[in-house]
Image (tube, rainbow, N blue to C red):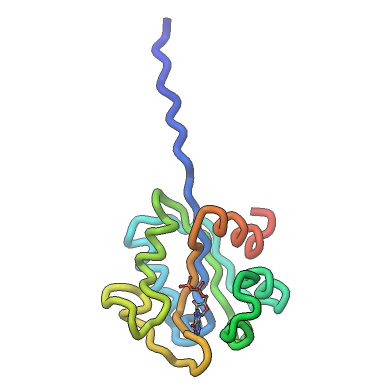
Length: 149
Ligand code: IDP
């Protein structure tokens, strides 16, 4: 009888990363993706696009009605966004950790927001990046930004 290798089912974890318009405008896309790759994650899809209001409404549905919602959507419409799917073990919390705290003024040095960001906006935190916050969000957001993937 042949030895049967144990079935190692590795779940491929994926997250959606967005380099927001401030990051693209400031020429930080390469630096941000460099940090993601240097951590050991793999980029599996990238797309530079001008997001539509409909896409942003779906993406930020959970924030609808909050005071920063409309300024946030307007900011995300202000220029191209680099949408990226990154893959790797623990990539969802791992990228959140690389990104740092939502408020770039408070974000720790060593993080993307802490090293490269500061609060450029009056009504919205222009904090360079978005990263999915859970497996459910990642699946939902990847389907929105990369239909067909
Ligand atoms: P996250 O991007 O760190 O996950 P969320 O709470 O999901 O933060 O908020 C989405 C985005 O909305 C933030 O990245 C930031 O750009 C903006 N935002 C969140 N909270 C505030 C706020 O209190 N004032 C202004 N902008 C905010």
